[in-house]
Length: 127
Image (cartoon, rainbow, N blue to C red; front, side):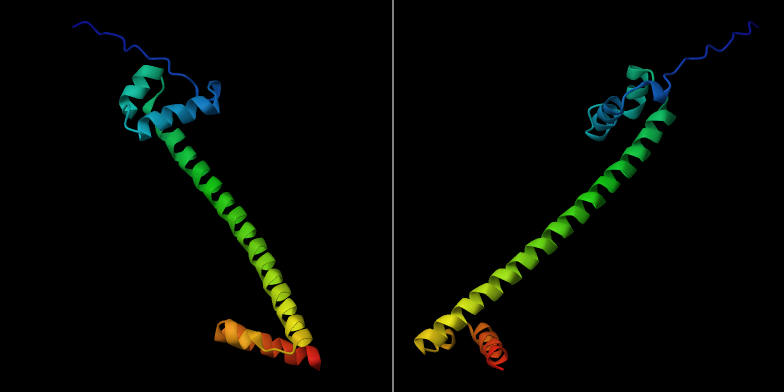
C-alpha cells in the first residue's frame, strides 16, 4: 500500500482580508447566492473562518442596531420636548387671546380635554 501524504490546503488567514471583503462574503452566503461550502472553496477560506465571521458580523450588526435605536430614542425624546414647548406656547397664545377679547373660544372650538387644560393653566396664571 502506498501511503499518500495528505496535502494540506493553505487557507487564508482572516487577518489578511479587509472587513469589506468579509462582509461581502457573508452577504453572498446570507442572500443565498452561494453556500458556505462553496464560498470556502471559491475564496480559499476555511468553513470555520466563515462561521466565525458570520458570528462576529451578527454581533456587529446587532450592536449597530442598538446604537441606532439609542439614537432614535434620543431623537424622539428631543422631538417630544419640542412638541411640549409648542403646545405650551400655543396654549399661552390662546389664553392671551381670550383675555384680550373676553371670549371663551377654547371651550367652543377645542376638544374638551384641551379646553380643560387651558382653563387649568389660566387659573394657575391668575394666582
